[in-house]
Image (cartoon, rainbow, N blue to C red; front, side):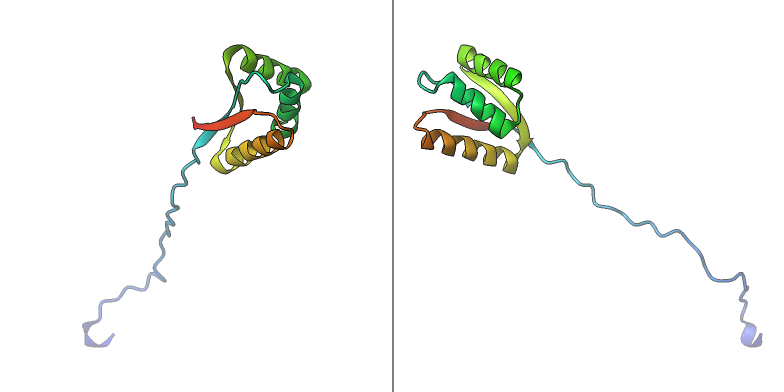
Length: 108
């Protein structure tokens, strides 16, 4: 080795490459709430709960009675976009059917 080069030949340098992943944050969840009114038929409320929230007839009746007795009831908990879509679907059907049924979302 000319010129005083002090190299050792241990082979290629090896190491572990650490790839950092950005931490993904869970999306905020929103409660879809149904509000009581004195005009919307109970059967319509049950239909809405079955159709848009996938509730069984028994569970839909239980939620409907809760809304009727307490003034407000929980239909489900979803991400913002899903909750907003469900509220829009309920409100559209209620308007088409000429019922004053109201649904809203609230951050969990």
